[in-house]
Length: 231
Image (cartoon, rainbow, N blue to C red; front, side, top):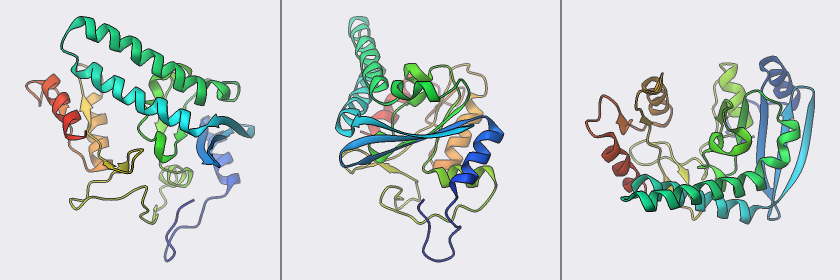
């Protein structure tokens, strides 16, 4: 785990993660790339497994394609185009799910899942993929960060090139080609607790909810503006 060279919290032990996983009934999945191959470490109550998934380039390709399809669907002006893009979104979701999550399904159980993706997969809407659809899904920067938040320990993790900050202090990640990407919290319409969740994201990332009814008079326009600003 990443940690500062001076005054940092110690790296967490696997035994600590296993204990917290068992106590909370969750499954932690950390994805990482080695020699161009995507792997997953699955830490679940009662077992830990290392699974070889396949070429990381394919997963990154479908991650990027899914993002493009979703962005196109958000701004599609005519029903025929929206219909076509919905099909494209479903295809991209299925392809990515088949590569990354479906092989892990025997060990994921039925409870909450915590995903720790590599940089190239950091923007995937994991909860929308078929294997995790309808399940509580959290995304963490690292297993250490997830565990320390649960145990109220200070993170004290060193800033790295995977978690840079802009001049304004906005916490960001990086796109597949190395460009900074920021986060907009979009809430609505009429979803229970949506505003509270957007506010929590705003607090974590330093972003501003871009479309939170009733704050935004035209939520659709606010969504399009937020996407355009992050292109």
